[in-house]
Image (cartoon, rainbow, N blue to C red):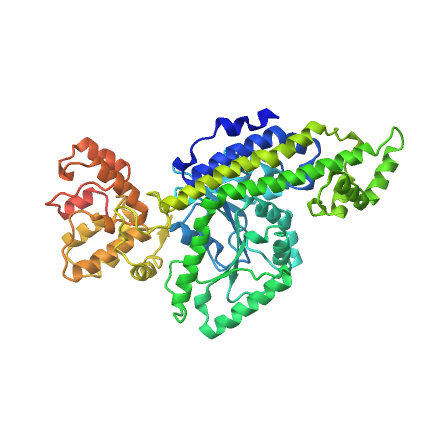
Length: 579
C-alpha cells in the first residue's frame, strides 16, 4: 500500500530545526492521518467506541500533554494548580470544604481568559473533548474548560477533578459514573497525580474504585503527599509508611509507587524540620512535569499503537462472530456464541496469531455485545487488516525514527523546551538570564500580608495597599515612586508579585539605598518579564523622548510608561495608582 507512507515522505522535514513541541505536533499529524484513513472506519463499523474508548478527533492528536489531578476533598488539588501557574485561574475555588464539584480542564489561551461550559466545550473542534458526549448531560453539566494566559499551559494542560467523597449516598448523587470518567481521563492523560493530605490517608470506597479505574495506566501515576509540613519529622515517617501500606492494599502491584513529599503552595513551611527534603521533592516533581513535553511524541505513538492493536483484535473478533451465523436461527446462535465467548477468543488467537494478552475480558465483552445483532456487523476486508499491519509495521516506526532523530539532536545541543524559550514557567533565569531580586523566602513573607487582604480576581485594591505602605513611615513622594515602579500594568491594583516587589522596594529604601529610575531586569516580576522584554526591544532611544502616541500605545498594551526625572506625587495620581 504505497499511499500509506505518502504523508511521512511528503512531511519528512528536518527535525533538527524543530523544538520538542514541534516534533510532537509533527508526529501527531502523522498519527492523525493514519487513524482517520485506516483505523477510524473500522472502529466506527464495529462499534469499538462502545467496547473500549470513544472515537478520537483531530484535536486529540494535536493537544498538549495532560496532567490529571485526583484526590479526596481539601487535599490541595486546586491550590497545587495555582502553585504551578503562580496565579489564580477562572472558576478556581479553594476552601476546607468540598469546593471543586466538577472536572475543570485548565488550558492555554493568550487572547482571552474565559470559562467554557462542558456542553459547549465538547462541540468545539479545537478542544479534545468531543468524546465526553458519551457520558451524557449529567456529566457535561459538571465539566468546564478554564482558559488562562499562563506560560506553563503552552506546554501542558491540567485537569482538576472533584474531591472524592466517602459513602454510598454521595457517590450516587453525582449523577454519572465517576469511575468510567476517571478511566477515560487516564487513557488521555500523560501523567496522573494522586494527592493525599498528611491528615487524611484513608482511602474511601469511591477513591478505591477510582484508583482501580486507572488499571492499565499505573505507569502514569505519581503520588503526592501534600501538606507534609503540618506534621513533625517523626510523624511524617509514620504517615509515609501508612500511605504506602494503604496504596499497596488497593493497587496490589510488586512495584512501589513514587511518592513526592512536600507542601505545594506559596506559603512558608509550618514546621521546618524537613525543609531541605521538601525543596528537593518539589524539584523532582517539577522535573517530572518538565519531561512531559519532551516525551509527548513517544507517548502519542505508544497510545496510538495500543489503541490500534485493540481495534484490530476487536475487528477480528467481530468478523469471527459474524461468520458463525447461517440463514436461520440467528437469535439462538447469538445466545450460544455469547455463552462461549472464551472459546471464540482462543480460536481468534490461534487463527490470526494474536497474543492472548491483547484480548479484552470475555465476560465484559459478551455483556456489551448482547446489545448488538452480530450478524449485521459489516464484513472486514482482508485489505483492511493488511493496512493495519502496514501502519504498525512500517508507518509508526518511521515516525519513531523521526522522534529519535530529534531526541539525539536535543541531546547534542543540550536543549530543553522549558529552558529554551522566553516564556518558560519553570525557569527562574528569564530576561537577561537573571533571577528575580525578590527571593523565595522574602516572597513567602510578603505573601502572608498579601493574602490577608480582601482580594478581587487575585488582586488587592490600591486603598488597602496604601495603608500597608504608610506603615513604613516613608515620605509620600518616595511611596508614590515605589507605587509607580511596582504597579507594572498601571491598573491601580496589585497582584501578589507586584505587591512583593512593592514591599521589597520599601525595605530597599529603608536600608539606605536609592530607588532606581526604571526597573532593572532582575526587578521585573516573572509574569511581566515578557512584556518588559518587548518594551526593551521597541525602546532603542531614551524612554522620556518617546512620542506621546507611542507612550499611549505601550500603556494600552499593559506596559509601564516611562518615568520622568522630575516625577511628583500628582503625576502618579494621573497614572491611575493609589497615590
